[in-house]
Amino acid sequence: MNITINGQPFETKNQTTLAKVLIDFGAKEPFAVALNSDFIPRKNCDAIVVTQGDRVELLSPIQGG
Amino acid sequence: MTNSFSIYGEQITSRLLIGSALYPSPAIMADSIKASGAQVVTVSLRRQQSAAAGDDFWQLIKDTGLKILPNTAGCHSVKEAVTLAQMCREVFATDWIKLELIGDEYNLQPDPFALLEATKILMDDGFKVLPYCTDDLVLCQRLADVGCEVLMPWGAPIGTGKGLLNQYNLKTIRERLPELTLIVDAGLGLPSHACQALELGYDAVLLNSAIAGAGCPVTMSHAFKAAVDAGRFAYKAKAMPEKDVAAPSTPTMGMPFWHQT
Image (cartoon, rainbow over all chains, first blue to last red; front, side):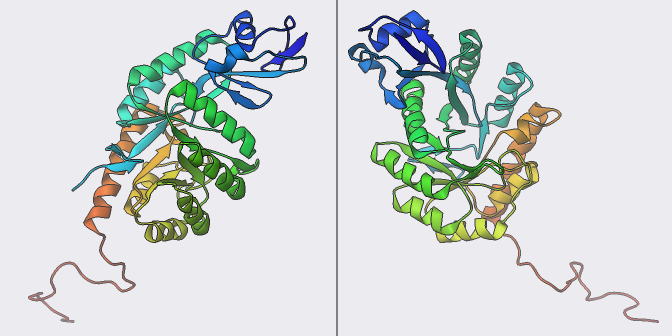
């Protein structure tokens, strides 16, 4: 099954939770997650199963003005 | 003389809020932030690319011990801005958000209509919104109507260094919204610009490029720190009335050779 993470293709198995996807991707703390443009609190990532074509955004701190 | 202002009930004594972007190096960023005396530093979120680089930056910011003000820079829609604000709240563990919602790519002008809509959504969601807005009085009034206690009108478009392009508008906003905390955000280039903003009665300035883009950012940081202090003292002292006709400062009484030819 194919999804995207930060705009890049990422392959994962069916019935995979968002939390597992983030581990498999190698997400580094600190970060926040959005799925298909909706914010997903970290505590909810275990309960969400990704589906074909899902778009995951994984964001971390950066400089800002 | 009270030397603090409020950001949603939190008393801040430094009238210079500083950005963390565009510095020549991480060390210069850290030194410039320290030299500024700022208590609030702005940061953002972007796609995780190089974890190591991000870690270094975030560790430096955490080491400053300053209050974090995350922004929604680069957002062009209400949905984008709201989602990014929610992500910022989780990562930075703060309900403060500098709400940026760009309406035009040419001058990076905030979209006033979308900004108001997003502000209302976020305020209802428990955020303490610091909207980056244009110097439009009615927009500022509408933002106050939805609960904003802090407004951040621009001095000039982001990164231009042009200073306060419309002092009349900024002054009118100050006069019409005396209870709000007002911070000039963006467009400043010189310490004198910051001083002018404080002279107008603004509570603080938020800037980044003017320091980070200077030949020596650390020295410029010192200069801005002195400028906001000077501007605040001047505002509290109340400036003399401007006149159109010259008036001698040295007494004319007792002048020798008075009008002799």
